Image (cartoon, rainbow, N blue to C red; front, side, top):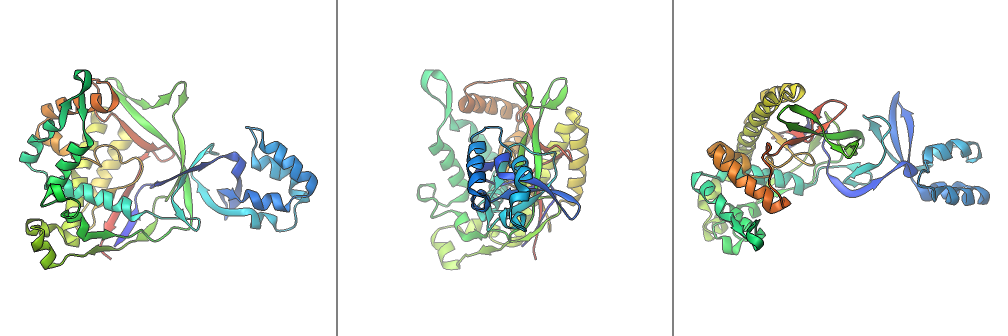
Length: 370
């Protein structure tokens, strides 16, 4: 498979780093964030500078950039080439704390698990019919103190009933066991972007704020326009399919069928996002999704992956909304109360993760057969 990033993609590694671990430089006329090897820097310093380095590191406001500028004349020639681990193009202003992308040998990639999760959402969405939707509300029970709750076991059984021939023996009888997805090829250079959320209300939209500060985060990303590859393997055997009573799902086990499901799922998401942007007058989002709609084709669908995909790209919520919007509102009002402990009358979901420099949403890619 071929995959090309339409907007920046971020898959978190669980780590982050700040000014004590990077400095800003220029490479080929572009500003970059250099991730530094702190141990290597320490080993290059004289004993006196080592003591000074340790002392300054204890300061919460310590910046590696300032320290290196002070001691650069004391460092051996060619030191800066030895102390860097990797660098990323700087798509934002000088970042504060940077959230790491998952990497191998300092090169970013999209894990197969993330891709398979997005494909699974598309397949599940395609399998949902009117009968399935009518069962959604039964997943919400009355829990302690009369408040609604969602039991993980109940929701998993619902998913298994769509993907498996026998929910009691899932995942062994799930259609997903026959679909294997590898990690993508790595990307040598990442891009740092600042990301924030658009939040809507009855008067329009604004940027999400945490207290008095704008809630901006800085992410390592696989930037726009990168081309990667991955393998999608269909490991089905007629004998096993028949033994598991999965013949009625076998139609999904081909590249064309999977891409068709992705296309239809993304088409519904894009249409919903255009309606959302138009309703709240978020012009840059409306323009983006109208262009994305043209790029989405059955042979080369677009797909949402990684951080910023949001509720609709990971659930069957949009299918429920299309089926019965009034019922959708009632159901997800209960979902909000069950998962967040409170209910509110606003649009759901009411935020969208946006790359602030380009005013585009996160995580859109185009997928094609190679």
